Length: 228
Image (cartoon, rainbow, N blue to C red; front, side):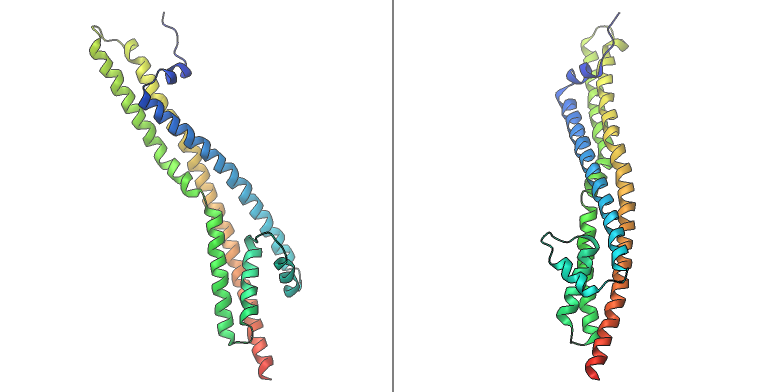
C-alpha cells in the first residue's frame, strides 16, 4: 500500500517552476500580512487621534495659542493637526490682504494637506489589491503547469493509472490553494481598509469645511476692523 503523500513532500518534489510559483505566493502572503497589521495599527491610531483632536479643538480653546503649541513640536504633524496648522499658517501669512484672497489661500493649503493625508492613509492598499486580484491566477498557472507535467509523465509508462499521476496533480493543486491563501486575506483587508480610509477622509473633510467657515468669518471680521 502506498504511503500517503504529505504536503511538505509534495512541495519538495514539485517541479522547479511550480516551486517558484509557490515561493512567490508565500512571499506575497507574508508581505500582505505585514502590511495588514501595519494598516490596522495605523488606522486605529489615526482614529484615536481624530477623536482626541476634535474633543480638544471644539472645547472652546484659544486657536492661536493652540497653533503656537503645535508649531513648537519637533516631530512632523499628521492628521487633523497637519490640516489645522497648514490652514492657520496660510491665514497668518495672508492676513491683512483681501478677505477672499485669504480664504482661497487657506483653502488651497488645507486641500494640499488633505491630499497628503489621503496618500498616507491609502499607502500599500494598492499592493493588497494587486495580491488579491493576481494571486489566484499565479496559483492557477502553477496548477496548469504541474498537471501538464503529470500527464506528460504518462507517456513513459506502459500502464497508466491514477497512482502514477496523483503526486503531480496534488502538487499542482497546492499551488492553487496557496494562491487562494494569499488572495483571500488581501481582498478582505483591502475592502475593509478602503471603507475605513473613506470614513476617516470624510471626517477630515468635515473639519476642513468647518475650519474654513471659521477662517472666512475671521478674515471678513479683520477686514471690517481695518476699514473702521
